[in-house]
Image 1 (cartoon, rainbow, N blue to C red):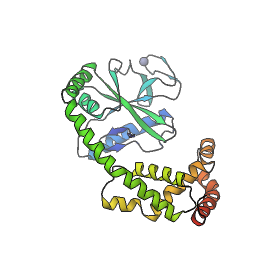
Image 2 (image 1 turned 90 degrees about the vertical axis):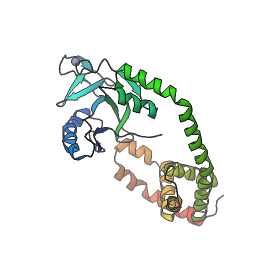
Image 3 (image 1 turned 30 degrees about the horizontal axis):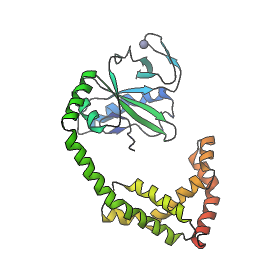
Image 4 (image 1 turned 90 degrees about the horizontal axis):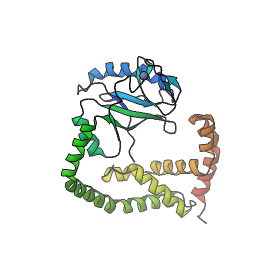
Length: 266
Ligand SMILES: [Zn+2]
Protein backbone atom coordinates (compact mmCIF):
# COMPACT_ATOMS: atom_id res chain seq x y z
CA UNK A 1 0.00 0.00 0.00
CA UNK A 2 1.41 3.30 -1.06
CA UNK A 3 0.61 6.59 0.61
CA UNK A 4 0.65 9.63 -1.57
CA UNK A 5 1.31 12.99 -0.06
CA UNK A 6 -0.69 15.79 -1.50
CA UNK A 7 1.54 17.78 -3.78
CA UNK A 8 0.43 21.37 -4.05
CA UNK A 9 3.15 22.59 -6.36
CA UNK A 10 6.07 20.90 -8.05
CA UNK A 11 7.97 18.97 -5.41
CA UNK A 12 6.30 20.77 -2.53
CA UNK A 13 4.71 18.43 0.01
CA UNK A 14 2.05 19.75 2.28
CA UNK A 15 3.84 20.04 5.60
CA UNK A 16 2.93 17.16 7.86
CA UNK A 17 0.55 18.05 10.67
CA UNK A 18 -0.65 21.27 9.07
CA UNK A 19 -4.34 21.72 9.54
CA UNK A 20 -4.82 18.76 11.91
CA UNK A 21 -8.08 18.02 10.11
CA UNK A 22 -8.96 21.67 10.06
CA UNK A 23 -9.34 22.39 6.39
CA UNK A 24 -9.55 26.14 6.75
CA UNK A 25 -5.93 26.46 7.67
CA UNK A 26 -4.73 24.49 4.70
CA UNK A 27 -5.59 27.44 2.48
CA UNK A 28 -2.81 29.39 4.14
CA UNK A 29 -0.15 27.18 2.68
CA UNK A 30 -1.52 26.81 -0.84
CA UNK A 31 -0.36 30.22 -2.09
CA UNK A 32 2.85 29.93 -0.08
CA UNK A 33 3.91 26.62 -1.59
CA UNK A 34 3.02 27.68 -5.09
CA UNK A 35 5.22 30.73 -4.68
CA UNK A 36 8.04 28.63 -3.24
CA UNK A 37 7.57 26.14 -6.06
CA UNK A 38 9.10 28.53 -8.57
CA UNK A 39 12.50 27.25 -7.56
CA UNK A 40 11.60 23.73 -8.66
CA UNK A 41 13.16 22.35 -11.81
CA UNK A 42 9.86 21.54 -13.52
CA UNK A 43 7.60 24.52 -14.09
CA UNK A 44 4.49 22.47 -13.30
CA UNK A 45 1.42 24.63 -12.74
CA UNK A 46 0.04 24.77 -9.23
CA UNK A 47 -2.20 21.85 -8.64
CA UNK A 48 -5.86 22.38 -7.92
CA UNK A 49 -6.61 20.64 -4.65
CA UNK A 50 -10.08 19.43 -3.72
CA UNK A 51 -10.53 18.65 -0.05
CA UNK A 52 -12.99 16.21 1.44
CA UNK A 53 -14.08 18.34 4.36
CA UNK A 54 -14.32 17.42 8.00
CA UNK A 55 -16.39 20.42 8.95
CA UNK A 56 -19.66 22.08 8.22
CA UNK A 57 -19.77 25.35 6.40
CA UNK A 58 -21.28 27.21 3.53
CA UNK A 59 -20.10 27.76 -0.01
CA UNK A 60 -18.70 31.29 -0.09
CA UNK A 61 -20.35 31.98 -3.42
CA UNK A 62 -23.75 30.29 -3.60
CA UNK A 63 -24.31 29.74 0.10
CA UNK A 64 -24.89 26.00 -0.29
CA UNK A 65 -24.61 24.15 3.02
CA UNK A 66 -21.46 22.04 3.15
CA UNK A 67 -21.26 19.00 5.37
CA UNK A 68 -18.59 16.62 6.50
CA UNK A 69 -17.66 14.47 3.52
CA UNK A 70 -18.51 17.12 0.93
CA UNK A 71 -15.91 17.99 -1.66
CA UNK A 72 -14.73 21.57 -1.69
CA UNK A 73 -12.08 23.83 -3.09
CA UNK A 74 -10.51 26.55 -0.99
CA UNK A 75 -10.10 29.92 -2.60
CA UNK A 76 -8.58 32.66 -0.47
CA UNK A 77 -9.38 30.57 2.62
CA UNK A 78 -13.07 30.35 1.70
CA UNK A 79 -14.71 27.07 0.77
CA UNK A 80 -16.40 26.74 -2.59
CA UNK A 81 -18.69 23.94 -3.67
CA UNK A 82 -17.46 22.11 -6.77
CA UNK A 83 -20.20 23.74 -8.83
CA UNK A 84 -18.95 27.24 -8.00
CA UNK A 85 -15.34 26.10 -8.34
CA UNK A 86 -16.15 24.99 -11.90
CA UNK A 87 -15.03 21.46 -11.19
CA UNK A 88 -18.42 19.75 -10.97
CA UNK A 89 -18.26 18.53 -14.56
CA UNK A 90 -15.15 16.49 -13.93
CA UNK A 91 -15.14 12.78 -13.21
CA UNK A 92 -13.44 11.13 -10.25
CA UNK A 93 -10.74 8.58 -10.91
CA UNK A 94 -9.81 6.84 -7.63
CA UNK A 95 -6.12 6.22 -6.99
CA UNK A 96 -4.74 2.73 -7.35
CA UNK A 97 -4.10 2.23 -11.04
CA UNK A 98 -0.85 4.09 -11.62
CA UNK A 99 -0.77 3.75 -15.41
CA UNK A 100 -4.39 4.83 -15.80
CA UNK A 101 -3.90 7.85 -13.54
CA UNK A 102 -0.71 8.90 -15.34
CA UNK A 103 -2.37 8.67 -18.74
CA UNK A 104 -5.61 10.37 -17.70
CA UNK A 105 -3.51 13.20 -16.27
CA UNK A 106 -1.65 13.55 -19.55
CA UNK A 107 -4.89 13.89 -21.50
CA UNK A 108 -6.64 16.20 -19.06
CA UNK A 109 -6.72 19.93 -19.73
CA UNK A 110 -8.18 20.47 -16.27
CA UNK A 111 -7.28 18.34 -13.33
CA UNK A 112 -7.77 18.46 -9.58
CA UNK A 113 -6.26 16.27 -6.89
CA UNK A 114 -8.69 15.01 -4.25
CA UNK A 115 -7.22 14.74 -0.77
CA UNK A 116 -8.49 13.80 2.65
CA UNK A 117 -6.94 14.32 6.04
CA UNK A 118 -5.90 11.10 7.71
CA UNK A 119 -6.14 11.46 11.47
CA UNK A 120 -4.23 8.25 12.02
CA UNK A 121 -1.31 9.26 9.82
CA UNK A 122 -1.52 12.99 10.42
CA UNK A 123 -1.20 14.05 6.82
CA UNK A 124 -3.29 14.53 3.73
CA UNK A 125 -3.77 11.50 1.58
CA UNK A 126 -4.43 11.55 -2.12
CA UNK A 127 -7.73 9.85 -2.87
CA UNK A 128 -7.66 10.23 -6.62
CA UNK A 129 -8.04 12.85 -9.31
CA UNK A 130 -10.83 14.76 -10.97
CA UNK A 131 -10.42 14.93 -14.75
CA UNK A 132 -12.69 15.24 -17.80
CA UNK A 133 -14.48 11.99 -18.64
CA UNK A 134 -12.90 12.02 -22.10
CA UNK A 135 -9.42 11.92 -20.56
CA UNK A 136 -10.32 8.83 -18.54
CA UNK A 137 -11.77 7.18 -21.60
CA UNK A 138 -8.66 7.83 -23.67
CA UNK A 139 -6.45 6.59 -20.86
CA UNK A 140 -8.51 3.42 -20.52
CA UNK A 141 -8.16 2.73 -24.24
CA UNK A 142 -4.39 3.16 -24.05
CA UNK A 143 -4.15 0.92 -21.00
CA UNK A 144 -6.19 -1.79 -22.73
CA UNK A 145 -3.90 -1.61 -25.74
CA UNK A 146 -0.75 -2.50 -23.78
CA UNK A 147 -2.32 -4.40 -20.85
CA UNK A 148 -0.53 -7.63 -21.83
CA UNK A 149 2.90 -6.08 -21.77
CA UNK A 150 2.28 -4.40 -18.42
CA UNK A 151 0.86 -7.62 -16.93
CA UNK A 152 4.02 -9.48 -17.93
CA UNK A 153 6.17 -6.76 -16.37
CA UNK A 154 4.21 -6.99 -13.12
CA UNK A 155 4.57 -10.76 -13.13
CA UNK A 156 8.35 -10.57 -13.55
CA UNK A 157 8.58 -8.07 -10.71
CA UNK A 158 6.44 -10.30 -8.46
CA UNK A 159 8.62 -13.32 -9.20
CA UNK A 160 11.75 -11.34 -8.37
CA UNK A 161 10.22 -10.17 -5.08
CA UNK A 162 9.00 -13.62 -4.12
CA UNK A 163 12.47 -15.07 -4.73
CA UNK A 164 13.99 -12.58 -2.36
CA UNK A 165 11.46 -12.02 0.41
CA UNK A 166 11.25 -15.35 2.29
CA UNK A 167 15.00 -15.37 2.89
CA UNK A 168 14.94 -11.83 4.18
CA UNK A 169 12.04 -12.49 6.54
CA UNK A 170 13.70 -15.62 7.91
CA UNK A 171 17.01 -13.78 8.35
CA UNK A 172 15.30 -10.97 10.22
CA UNK A 173 13.39 -13.42 12.44
CA UNK A 174 16.67 -15.20 13.19
CA UNK A 175 18.29 -11.90 14.14
CA UNK A 176 15.42 -11.23 16.53
CA UNK A 177 15.75 -14.70 18.03
CA UNK A 178 19.48 -14.20 18.58
CA UNK A 179 19.15 -10.81 20.28
CA UNK A 180 15.87 -11.51 22.10
CA UNK A 181 15.67 -15.24 22.87
CA UNK A 182 12.65 -14.62 25.10
CA UNK A 183 10.57 -13.27 22.25
CA UNK A 184 7.98 -15.91 21.28
CA UNK A 185 8.71 -17.33 17.81
CA UNK A 186 5.28 -16.38 16.44
CA UNK A 187 5.84 -12.77 17.46
CA UNK A 188 9.36 -12.74 16.04
CA UNK A 189 7.92 -13.96 12.73
CA UNK A 190 5.30 -11.22 12.74
CA UNK A 191 7.85 -8.52 13.57
CA UNK A 192 10.12 -9.79 10.79
CA UNK A 193 7.34 -9.78 8.23
CA UNK A 194 6.32 -6.27 9.16
CA UNK A 195 9.91 -5.01 9.04
CA UNK A 196 10.61 -6.58 5.65
CA UNK A 197 7.39 -5.12 4.29
CA UNK A 198 8.59 -1.74 5.45
CA UNK A 199 11.94 -2.19 3.79
CA UNK A 200 10.63 -3.85 0.65
CA UNK A 201 11.76 -1.98 -2.40
CA UNK A 202 15.07 -1.16 -0.73
CA UNK A 203 17.02 -4.02 -2.20
CA UNK A 204 20.67 -4.81 -2.51
CA UNK A 205 23.30 -6.05 -0.10
CA UNK A 206 23.87 -2.81 1.75
CA UNK A 207 20.14 -2.36 2.38
CA UNK A 208 19.86 -5.96 3.58
CA UNK A 209 22.79 -5.44 5.93
CA UNK A 210 21.27 -2.27 7.34
CA UNK A 211 18.03 -4.14 7.84
CA UNK A 212 19.76 -6.67 10.11
CA UNK A 213 21.67 -4.04 12.03
CA UNK A 214 21.12 -4.60 15.79
CA UNK A 215 19.60 -1.14 16.12
CA UNK A 216 17.15 -1.78 13.27
CA UNK A 217 16.17 -5.06 14.90
CA UNK A 218 15.75 -3.38 18.28
CA UNK A 219 13.57 -0.63 16.81
CA UNK A 220 11.31 -3.15 15.10
CA UNK A 221 10.95 -5.14 18.33
CA UNK A 222 10.25 -1.99 20.37
CA UNK A 223 7.58 -0.84 17.91
CA UNK A 224 5.94 -4.24 18.13
CA UNK A 225 5.96 -4.23 21.93
CA UNK A 226 4.60 -0.69 21.98
CA UNK A 227 1.63 -1.51 19.81
CA UNK A 228 0.80 -5.01 21.06
CA UNK A 229 1.97 -5.21 24.68
CA UNK A 230 1.18 -1.74 26.00
CA UNK A 231 -1.85 0.56 25.93
CA UNK A 232 0.05 2.98 23.68
CA UNK A 233 -2.55 3.03 20.90
CA UNK A 234 -5.33 3.78 23.39
CA UNK A 235 -3.24 6.55 24.98
CA UNK A 236 -2.58 8.03 21.57
CA UNK A 237 -6.25 7.91 20.72
CA UNK A 238 -7.17 9.61 24.00
CA UNK A 239 -4.54 12.37 24.13
CA UNK A 240 -3.32 12.64 20.53
CA UNK A 241 0.14 13.31 21.93
CA UNK A 242 2.82 10.92 20.71
CA UNK A 243 5.57 12.20 23.00
CA UNK A 244 3.40 11.85 26.10
CA UNK A 245 2.09 8.43 25.11
CA UNK A 246 5.60 7.14 24.36
CA UNK A 247 6.86 8.42 27.68
CA UNK A 248 4.07 6.67 29.55
CA UNK A 249 4.66 3.25 27.99
CA UNK A 250 8.47 3.47 28.12
CA UNK A 251 8.91 1.59 31.45
CA UNK A 252 6.67 -1.25 30.27
CA UNK A 253 8.59 -1.55 26.99
CA UNK A 254 11.92 -1.60 28.82
CA UNK A 255 10.64 -4.31 31.16
CA UNK A 256 9.47 -6.59 28.34
CA UNK A 257 12.60 -5.92 26.28
CA UNK A 258 14.82 -6.88 29.22
CA UNK A 259 12.81 -10.06 29.78
CA UNK A 260 13.08 -11.04 26.10
CA UNK A 261 16.81 -10.39 26.11
CA UNK A 262 17.42 -12.70 29.01
CA UNK A 263 14.82 -15.42 29.04
CA UNK A 264 14.38 -18.35 26.76
CA UNK A 265 11.11 -18.45 24.86
CA UNK A 266 8.42 -20.56 26.41
ZN1 LIG B 1 -21.40 27.15 -4.45
